[in-house]
Length: 151
Image (cartoon, rainbow, N blue to C red):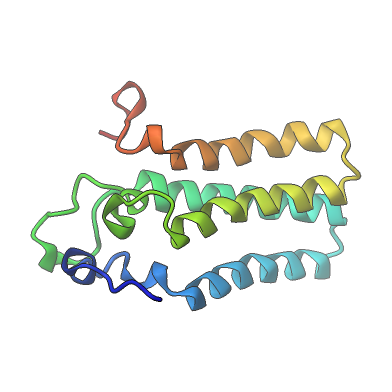
């Protein structure tokens, strides 16, 4: 049974799309398309998945955990102090959108490590990027600004 969204979530146009599973398919498709483009350029499988992991890490950290507020003027600053991640489902932890966005970087890490034949060098390159994306998603980091950065 699908839970109907609450009124504040319906009013926050910035995040209302993320609960739709079609959005998740599109999100995954974008990064797999990057992988196909890199393969077309002749980049090795391990290097390509590592690059996809880096691109995903840079994009998702900046969009989900760095930029605050919404691009819409009609919210009257209600979300100006919250990042995209903090706005999802009114900050409810472990909903389906958050689960998908948490599992996806782990899956990219697995693909990078597996294609690199589990070499230690590949792990040392990919693990920090994945950690940079996953740590801000943990419940104890919700609303936290380390050393006041981005506050």
